[in-house]
Image 1 (tube, rainbow, N blue to C red):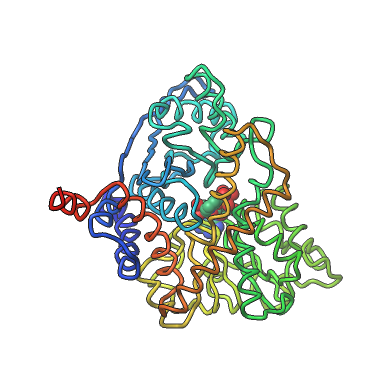
Image 2 (image 1 turned 180 degrees about the vertical axis):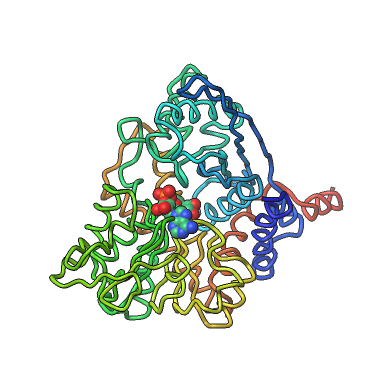
Length: 451
Ligand code: NAD
């Protein structure tokens, strides 16, 4: 990808900021400060491979803004990682932490790698090597990483261990999303999906939805996508389509989500969830005469990710990667409600098309904020030496998600703006209060004239 295109995703993210500033009480200087990342680090990570050769991987860590607290944000392992993407993700994290009112700024990291091509030992050496390179940039009081796409609790455990070795003291508060025995929090694993689920429950109350009549399609059946599907399915929602990077499956009557999760975990692909091999061989619907056919004319079908986005469903949940709903396909997206579990799945120009179609978009900085909220709980427990029960974590998370969802929904209704603009304005109000408390030109000129 060219540097120009890489930078576009960050510029697109900043455009949202400018749009929302109109509706927020934010000083021009505070806004200008938010247009630029506070610090950017690019590192090379030499890794000894299993065959004895040396490979050098590129990695990034960005701290966007730390006015409200230490920067916070995940580390992504993906072949398409680039600086523009990491900058955009760090900016979104600053907004997200402000949306839910937790005392963190925004950061993000990434390594350009396809982790599926590495052995477990190579992956561990890469994870530890990345921490060695960024150790002076992170810390419990400065910048606190967490998992993101293709990183998980095991990797966070290695990273915390490496940082502790470098600092010569056990430092669980440097990273969140760790395994429970290493200081992880109960309830972190499903927090992102659960946060989105609490948003949907608020919509259900506001709109008087009957779950069994609500059809849902989920793009990306990884951590976040699986958990939101599981919770909705348990409440009676009809999850009619799911997908992963290989493609998707569709069944009008609804998929058996616990079974789909078990199969995805076992076989590593949703294509296996909906078997096309023979009649009566469908492990999802379990029906006696399931005519699974790829054309989709019978009870179910294998579909592409593009088709999934355009399905006639009540709720569309993009839970994979960014830039999935664009000017190219937005006019074909017919779902009246989109709940953005992924970061940045909709481009800013696609927003306009969705708005003109009357689509309600619960934006990423609200819908997927459950993950960082429970990360904050983990950081608090690590620093206080506490360990909360799962019920306590769920209760605290629900309180925050419902409170902030309703505040943003009310701003959207009162100001007649879309929910994304309302969420950014809500975040900007909180960030600008912190920046202004540090002093802006109006503060200094006032003190000059009075002094
Ligand atoms: P994950 O790695 O567990 O799952 C990602 C899933 O998306 C996988 O099933 C993968 O096969 C699928 N996928 C990849 N490319 C795809 C494509 N082109 N089309 C359809 N599916 C595709 O990652 P995750 O942690 O579930 O994260 C998913 C999204 O949610 C990301 O945008 C991430 O930034 C965001 N998010 C995650 C968390 C968290 O706590 N896990 C928190 C906030 C936001």
